[in-house]
Image 1 (spheres, one colour):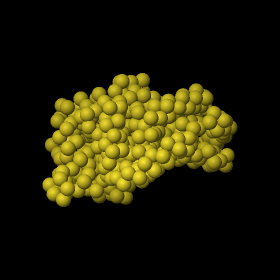
Image 2 (cartoon, helix red, strand yellow):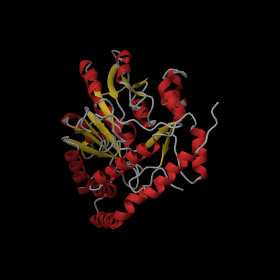
Image 3 (spheres, helix red, strand yellow):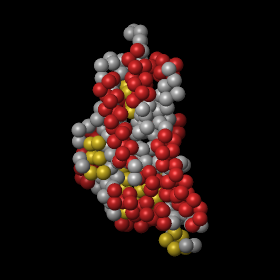
Image 4 (cartoon, one colour):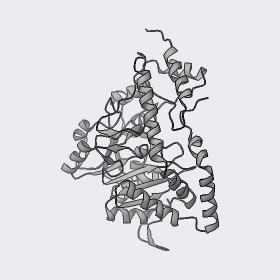
Length: 369
């Protein structure tokens, strides 16, 4: 089976470095918030052109702590996309705020900035744009609206490490940004991990306290916090991977360009759009088709894995039934839930395997109704 993603294929070539780093951590006896974590924070801050970087346990915690540190909670509203992984909205609810969903742009699948203004109320405190599948959202327009209405902008960059927007790194485009190091992410580890970036020292200071039970000084707690810390082993692995991320992302972009070229004439699918004002890093390569189920079935027969991202928009999830959104409220997102699917793309994907995917797609026949 040719997988959608293959983290192992990225890590095995650097296995010796990883095992050596793990051994060093083991022998150090310092396993939580040690030298690897602080060095990783400094390295990522430099790479993403921000002054502060705080490592946490996972991407969901990163979003939750960012919201909490921005003072967002009960009675507040946060505007975000309905077409994302559930954690984007979950973090808003976790801090007690109300999620205000809006639809997405039909080309980029990112939050449609044209829908923001009509959803701003006196309770609105922040906007969370998601750089979906590795493509940056339209941050100029989002930041402009946020500035005019005194709103925080929290980037959900969990799928987009290394992406650029008008020459600036994702992670430096809002007040705060959140990343995930889940194994399938572009920059990853062999477990969970996350990081928060900002150039606001006040926010950074509060996040550092919140991640350690609301404590600035051991055993003295200023507020109710969290236990959300990146351990030394994962930090050591991510530091090694950080040295390779630019090369890995270039390979993703090259493979995506090859797909775009070779699939463009297949009338039953639509290849992904990439904006000319940003650099898409293709965490996922997603196609649109009215014949998704048939295509997935045929690819499976040829040992090609696919994935549906996402089969149910967040506003229609059972967990948000209380918000009373209805089918038809966000037609673009709901349409994508029925049409969109991912095909294999990862840095170690060979041209041979990619050609197998391409040829399989070219030979699929569908019955037009």
